[in-house]
Image (tube, rainbow, N blue to C red; front, side, top):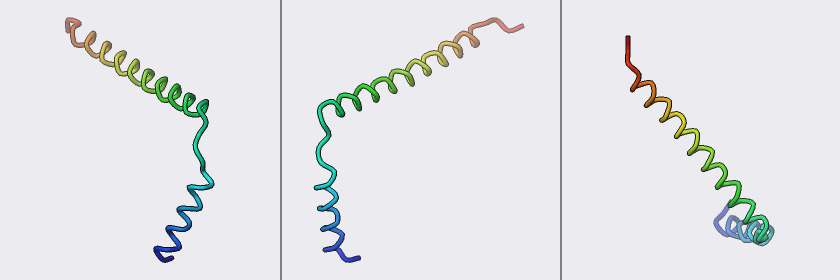
Length: 59
């Protein structure tokens, strides 16, 4: 596969893909934001439990 055929197939693929609609972009933004928030909450809970275990007096 030469460079010319590769570039023409890339050009053809870009024409097929098209731009996402406004609703699709908004869905991607919401999904990504929810994922980031969930990961942050899980990290906060782990850090909170870790600090609580370190602060407890050991017998």
